[in-house]
Amino acid sequence: MEAVLATSTWRKSSRSTPDNSCVEVARPASARDIVGLRDSKNPDAGHITVSATAFAAFLGDVVR
Image (cartoon, rainbow, N blue to C red; front, side, top):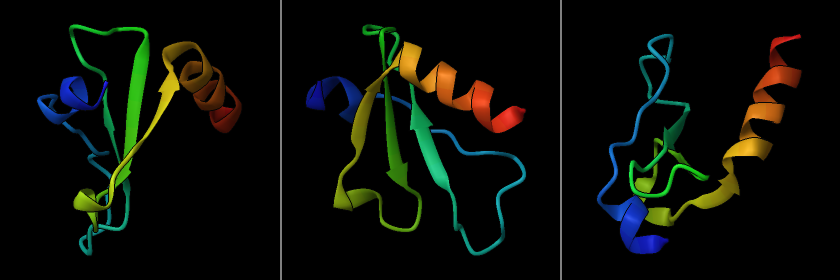
């Protein structure tokens, strides 16, 4: 998965703060069942990988 996420496009919210304090998300086209998350201030520090299902559930809970 490391190589898949390394070549993925990382995105952050359009509502991000000017100081880049946010989480970036990547969902690789070749592995749609995973989502990568990393700190936008320190992208070289690594990332965590979660299932797309778990991430969708997390977002559903946050929005409520």
